[in-house]
Length: 293
Image 1 (cartoon, rainbow, N blue to C red):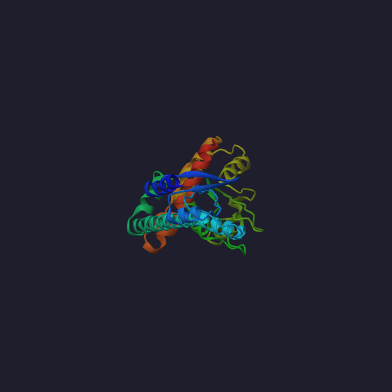
Image 2 (cartoon, rainbow, N blue to C red):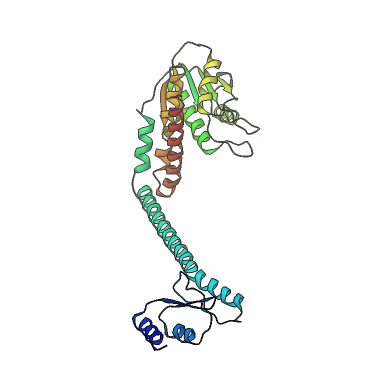
């Protein structure tokens, strides 16, 4: 009797676990004061779980309540981990958004405060000249929803009239279709006729929906017509257009006019010019990848 008590005291003092059998019931001691006290009183216990806490329960205690309490305690670290991961994700998202806005702001400053768009458009335009020839090919641009001539088409029509009068051309080919009910070539032709170009000197091509189709349909319309051919389009569009015409075997002399270079002179319009240049660069990449230039 005295030996057993000394053993229990020693287990309590040194924190060692000891298992005793009382009849068919198994009792587990973990060295804690409450556990040792209950063990001496002969009350039943269950094993300590992996979380490091004792779910020792006296006989008759509602087991469901203990199981629920244990579940809540085990869920707490998981909830904290989930909240930490959400906070970490939000922090990274905010940092990425701030970095993106800072980069966008820097780009806006560079675009609006420097001559970047003017230089870029000049690189895409190539050499600036005023070639003379026999056939002037004018490529269509934008058109408004009501069928009126759009901004880029308007300036192509203006420079088409000037080039026709100054270059001694005999014929004009206006190429441009589009999904609208009125093909873009129609208002360009009408504008040129209203500004002194003879209607009989203008032929239009209205089936094209892209620069490559402009070249293919213009070649078919010309049908190996003799004479020097000059291609007129916007400065930023000339790089792609000239190479598409050359790729299909239609030799033309490039005659770019200042579109972005003109609009880029006003700093408030430079951002729109920058967007046009980026979109045109994407098209150049696609045409190059597909082998069209």
